[in-house]
Image 1 (tube, rainbow, N blue to C red):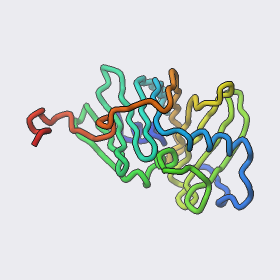
Image 2 (cartoon, one colour; image 1 turned 180 degrees about the horizontal axis):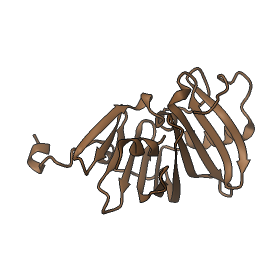
Image 3 (cartoon, rainbow, N blue to C red; image 1 turned 90 degrees about the horizontal axis):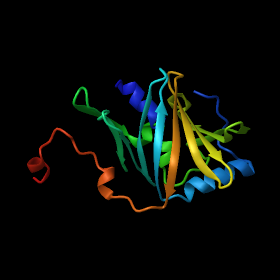
Image 4 (cartoon, helix red, strand yellow; image 1 turned 90 degrees about the vertical axis):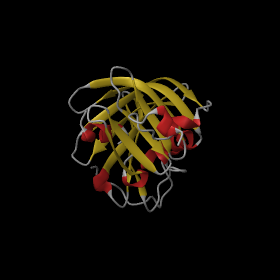
Length: 203
């Protein structure tokens, strides 16, 4: 799997408004309040990349700073954020790449409090056929791309998101069987090299 495709998932260029001095749209505030009120989340996901390739698995989120995409077999790739870095494991190449969370689109979802300010902007809020759409981007580096969160009503919940990357490619992630504020094993949010033997892990 190409590294660019992995970066596209997480999360993942729109014209942006400057940091909001005016009050947020009430719909945007409702969406931000929902996300900011979530401590942990677990869901099944389906990911569709720019090439139409679909992958499935389980998504784990522990805010702030931590997430994991665990793909269903036979895919052995995974993505994990440990609070500081986000790691991408390429099983075919048997190697990992990583980047500081703050340098990726994932930061828009993983920061302690998601709110418009000097470094984050709400670029769009609209009602779509699929629900309420809230788009976020870095106010300082909008060229990184954007994250659009899509919420459904009754009950209000996150059902999917779209990542627009710096190349203009879009990756869609659809959520199902969403559980919030559930216990999650802390080990989910550490990068462990799959090529290391058990004995080496205990050293």
